[in-house]
Image (cartoon, rainbow, N blue to C red; front, side, top):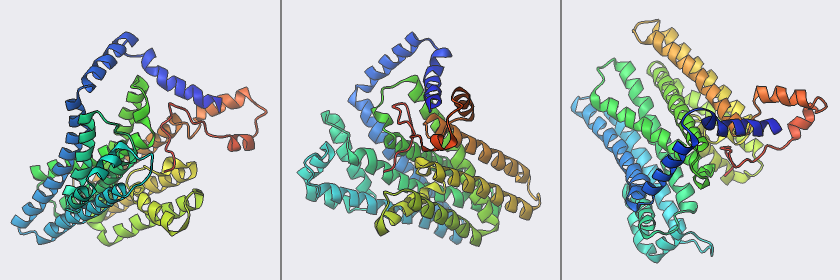
Length: 409
């Protein structure tokens, strides 16, 4: 497995071999650190921006539902509003639950976030019980810690908040993207500016939620700012934009022609991933573990987030996603029979995008050290001809400090 470290060294040293000199990067890093020391910048980036994106996603969805109502499109109004209020209730329930658990925590090593909540537990519980307001309670405590210079690490900030936004992305943003794509194709209506803005914001919210969750889950926030880290985040963001765009477009197109079957397709994908993950991960026990990771696998039916924890679940999800996208868009194209100008571009774009997204997923696994690259494998085999396949299979995966591997929660 020494070749894996070679891959990491190559990735980290790539920016030194190409691009701006090291002195230029050092000056850029120092300038950014000076800017980041200002608490106003921290609050804007870590509190104001996420909340504005959340409110913009919610507001544009409501405005779009009202547009359908004013246009006497009751069916689309009901679907759009339902996929706005339903996820809102889910996010509110989780937000309120996290606040209540934090207020009741008696751990002696509890975080500064928990200590702040426990200063006025009744107040925070009452505020978190109000829909929409509950998520603001988390950020109110977060901003208070930022302004006071307190410790902003801990379970509440590094896991609970990303999970809340991840739930909102899957239940609201992705659902709206699929629905609006279906409405556009099904009705062949002229796309309004509001719909375009709503879909763009939904895509931004989804990608931001997934990348942020992986950023904290892989402990990248505890690493110093390097060119390698920036490169990984840019690569991850580009991959997720492509992956989510292809996935929701495929499902929207397929649902426009075969609405009753889209739920079956998603359900089979979810069931296969849940059973596989529960069977492979030995830490998941009992009904609670099955429910928890059943919910997690809902995310992976749209964006690969938890399945890279294990090689087998990664390969399974990659195969299901790729085959599912190709099958759905092919069936849709066959039913359409080239009636519209966008049929062929959609078919070619989705197939090509699905393949490229799968390749990006493989590259991400290689860079994280979870999978050995073919080139490195061949080189290692040539250097050590006596190494057997069984030894390679049983050799541990290195836990490099430069790795973005997904560790099991």
